[in-house]
Length: 423
Image 1 (cartoon, rainbow, N blue to C red):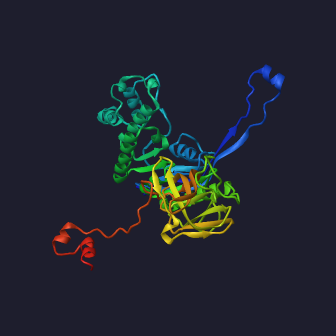
Image 2: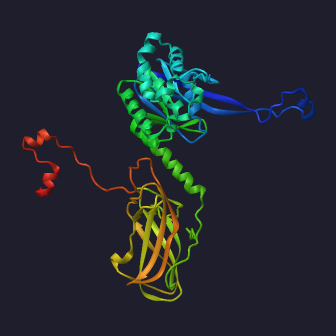
Image 3: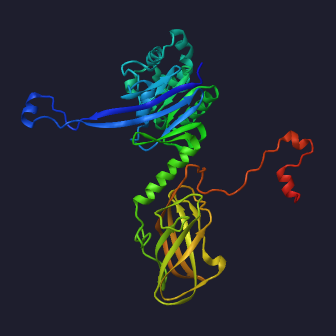
């Protein structure tokens, strides 16, 4: 048996876009012929192979051709050119309600889908209880599926797709419609299928899922494969491109980040923060900062008169309302400030904030006297590289090699014991 489950050779898929359709004779006589249809290539010259038992991810922006590719692989679309060779029985979950008959009950649709997949009645009956239990839709299993919610559709569709012993499973990102409990259940089952040797083709926007679950991935851009290779490498390239596109789509004004909410300022006003400027690791102005990368936050100020002592401070509040950090220059002492315009830099070796939107407060104080305080008046957007961890911040540290209990019992010294003993 071949080790290749799916082989795609120069696949292309074209659609015709009809801006207007004039089917009635009267409409044609009055308005003339409809404009000529425009061709649209959803997929162009895509070639790749998927090994048996591997998990393959398709990622890209909306409209990049991911779902079209999946439907061509599943045999739903016939390619305009090229060919696809599939070695194995395919089970697919591509969209809500795909393959379901609205007038039939959930139980009847299970039988229908099983028959379409080529399974015998005995095989379907053997899997029936397992499917119903996985779907978790209770008494609705004997109700017509036309009354199902979108979440119930996903539950039943996924349960059928994964429970009928698929050799090749193709899943579009309809799982995201389900609730948190069901999503965890689905992903746990995908891991189990992967360990059992099922070939999985997955369309997803979750870079974490691409990194954790997939062996290889293809990044599609306007119907063409932009990068193909190891899943982590492709995910890194994709998120870097997304970040770069966002940066260049929003030109940075020389005046940097202006006041956002227009709230009344507190303080005497002798020195005021006029704007914030975010500089990337190359020292270039940027509308966003990258988590885990070096950066500089530049505080521009204007002093109406000279002051001998000033301490500058920043406060970062997550969009959830949590107060994340509040660094200030008091650690190195107060600074004199001359009359006029100026700025002070807060240099960060590694930005520990996780991706998200933060409100930034600024302050200039001296021994209890407030020159200026702006509460949550500025915004900061932090973007990730696809490898973010849970939580609001990263925790720096080094993971050491595990030490087994048996080894420690035999007289080996653990890393923690070695640290405590000063070794």
